[in-house]
Image 1: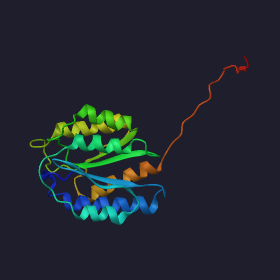
Image 2: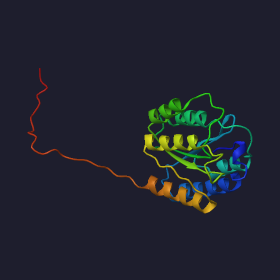
Image 3: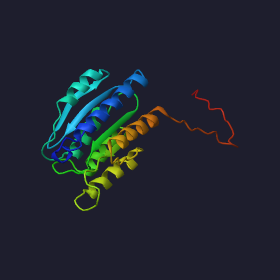
Image 4: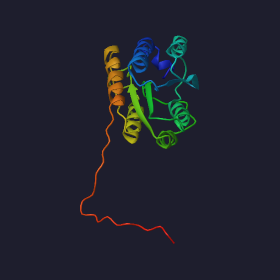
Length: 196
């Protein structure tokens, strides 16, 4: 979650929407699902390591306040490293207004980290300004590229209701998996003898 100064106006409803998302994830999802919470402004903070304890994450959410710059790429890089080696699907949901102003990592390092973690990213870009003047359109394009490069999808909600809808769409996608297989035709089977 982005808690930089530019998110101050929208942060309260973002927090409430994240809580509803987590309630649904834990109450209606797979019993093995767990979540961690990272926040980022000028620094990246791990607020809760992977857990199924909703109260622990909610306690962290209650402490959030917006201030300072945005280390988006650093947050993606560190969270991706945390996903590596974990069992199951690796999903990263990023709630942000799109900009990066203070990261030490760059776009390519962050993208490589999430791809190496075999992660899928769902950026939710809460845009505080409706017209292009003053928006970080470059940051929004970067997030769209993260989603496309990992098999995720980008959302651009303009209200609290649309933010809830974005989270619902993500949950629906996470609960739906497809396995595609094929058997080639006209291939002769041959026996392979492994004896010396």
